[in-house]
Length: 80
Image 1 (tube, rainbow, N blue to C red):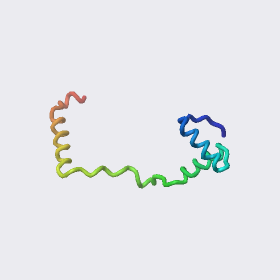
Image 2: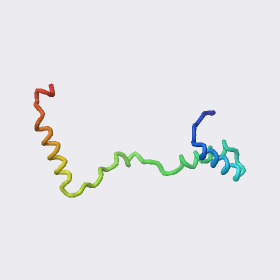
Image 3: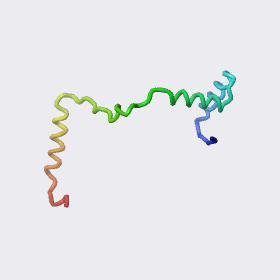
Image 4: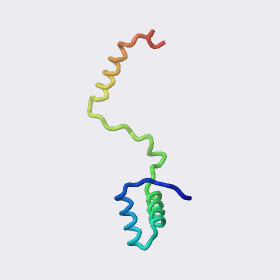
């Protein structure tokens, strides 16, 4: 398959130099690089959703109090 991809000039030059130093065409070098990248570790389905961050002690109570305070000002009629 043929496609067009924009990459920074410096990265292009570095890739072309690396390919030449290995005796590869740029196409072969980029294909190999993509295969290597795709073969690396992947997110497993069980890794998502990410667990929530740990909050300092009492922070969850403070957040909930703020939410409760804001919602105490909402009139039920405004939601209809």
